[in-house]
Amino acid sequence: MSPGAGRLGDRVVLVTGASRGIGLAIARACADEGARLVLSSRHLEELEAARETFSDPSRVFVRASHAGSREAANELVSWTVATCGSLDVLVNNAATNPYFGPLVDLDDARMLKTYEVNQAAIVTHVSAAWHAWMRDHGGVVLNVASIGGLTVEPGIGWYNVTKAAVIQLTKQFAWELAPRVRVNAIAPGLVRTEFARGLWEGREQDVAANIPLGRIGEPSDVASLAVTLVSDDASWVTGQTFVVDGGTTTKPSGGVS
Image 1: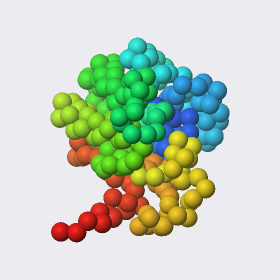
Image 2: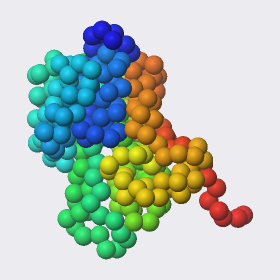
Image 3: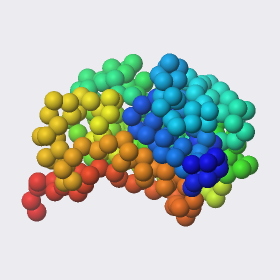
């Protein structure tokens, strides 16, 4: 596709947590629609390797950044605008989950780290994008939540709490930043990524059997909807969270009335 063509026509898209998995898939889908990309994550070498997987790496810029730091968020956004000339789309994808277990045993260090990366980073990156570009020029924000923010699961309760906050932040920002900026979220189910490997590796068939559509999700399943939401095809859509889970959340609870 020639530069400037496609649904995103030379817009600048910043994706956090973009060196692999869902973040990288969203970045590729946006590039396929004509966008210029800024990929961000903690490790520069992984970002550089990811950039080389694009059909035109010259339209992809990389910047190492710590999602859980307000200072880093401000610096990343400022660098993006200075380097690319604008910031039209922000995709908040970075996430972490350093703890597995009951909430009553969650230690302060891992509680704070999960909060900073999964929840506070939404606030800091949206704030930075608003003040640096979107307040005057408009734009689109897409937050990556999780179906865990809509339900209860063993072991990952605190992660799910932070993802529930992402869903609420999406609504709040959509109301506060309208009409200049649209803000939506995607809530994926179980997707075949390195981040979620512990939830599916070694028992894929059993896991897939419990998903109505019969398979674990792929990053491309999320990316295909993401690129629509950040394009003008969704120009009258804001404040919404879209579930992409193969039907997982449609399953009956098992209770009786």
